[in-house]
Length: 171
Image (tube, rainbow, N blue to C red; front, side, top):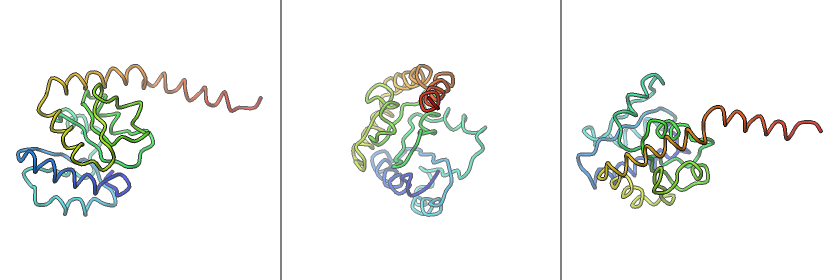
């Protein structure tokens, strides 16, 4: 979602920085939310670099992931970061802020990259680094998918949730 609490303003700042570094970069922002118009207006100067799709049916998301090389998120607020999980399932390396909600999911240098919150130079450098090293990006993408299959499969997650309920039930 394109929302202030999800880092929409930071996303715009990152886009500006990435395009300044690599002027032919193509960025796709998929989503909608209360900050959609602000983001759209803030990036209007980059019609050849930035595509903002608005709301997209879930059935079309696979095509967006398949055309992508790196997933980046500037979110400040997540529970279980759904779009990051989706990107990893599609074997994309990820670049995200180093927040607790990403810690077990994004392993620095293995499944993606972590940047200190609001370190736009660091995040931009990591994104560009993955774009210019497709072998490393592909390896991280494969590692991402393997991690999800091992630790985030429905069977394992359902079992963990059931165990929580078993442990808090009446004694």
